[in-house]
Image 1 (cartoon, rainbow, N blue to C red):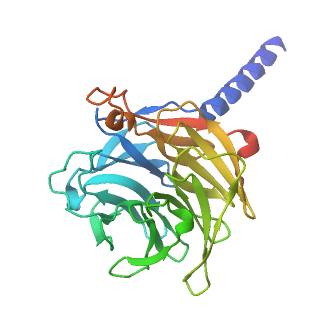
Image 2: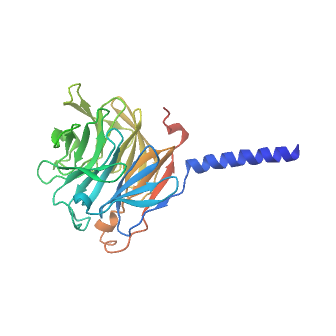
Image 3: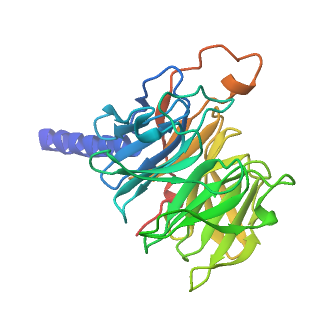
Length: 324
C-alpha cells in the first residue's frame, strides 16, 4: 500500500510538473548580436516567426527550441523586417519590409521603398511584393479578416491600407486623426476582434481605437477606447480570441487587453521588461521579443552590444485564459 501510495504520489507530482512546464517553457535564444527582433507571430502548429531590424525572418520551433533562417536578409527584396504575420487563411507569412532607417543598416538586395512581402508558409519562397502607397510610408504590422482581406498599418502616415484577396496592389483604406498624433504619425499594432471590427494602437499617443468595417467592406466610425490604465507605448497587437488581445508595450510590459463596449480593460502579464515590441499567444503562454531599441537611441548605450536576444514566454494567469 505504501509503495502504491508513493507511486501514485509520484505520478501526481510528475503530472503537476508537466503542467508547470507546459505553462512556463524555457526561453529560446535567437542568433545575431544585432538582430533587434521587432515582431513575432505563431502558427497553429507551434512554429513562431520572428522578424528583425537587420532583416530576414527566423522560424522557431516552440517544442524543440530549434531556430532556422526562414527568410534571409535581402532575399526577395526584403529589408529591415518590422511586423510579421502568419496568415492561415491564405497560407502566407506576411512581412513588413522597410529600407535602411536610423535603427538599421542598409541591407544588400533590399528594395529601396517600404513594401509588404508575402512568403509561402511551407517553403519560405517569396510570392508577393506590394509597394506601399503614399509619401514616405513605413509598413509596420498587419491583420487578416476571415475572407482573406489583409489590413496593414503605415506608421509614418497613420493610414490603414487594405489588400483584397487576389488584388494586385495595396489601397489606402482609412485615415482618422483620432488614431494619429499631431504630425499624423505613430499608427502601429492592428488586429481583428471577435466582433469583426479592426482594433489599432498608436505608439506615440498611447491610444487604442476601434475602426468599424461596414458590411460592404468600407471603413465606418472610429471609436477611441477608454483604457482602464494608461498604455505604455503600445506596439504589437494580436487577437487571442473573443474580444481579447495581447499587446506588447515598449515601455516595459506585456498586457492582455479585454474590450467591452467602448472600454478596454488592461491587465499586466509581465512587467519590468526592456522594450518588448511583439507578442503572441500559444498554449497558455505569451511569447514575446524585446527589441532593445535603447541601443539605437540612448547615447549612453549606442555602440555597445545589447544583451543576447531571446524569444521569451510568460504564463497567462488562469483568470485571463481564453477558452474556445
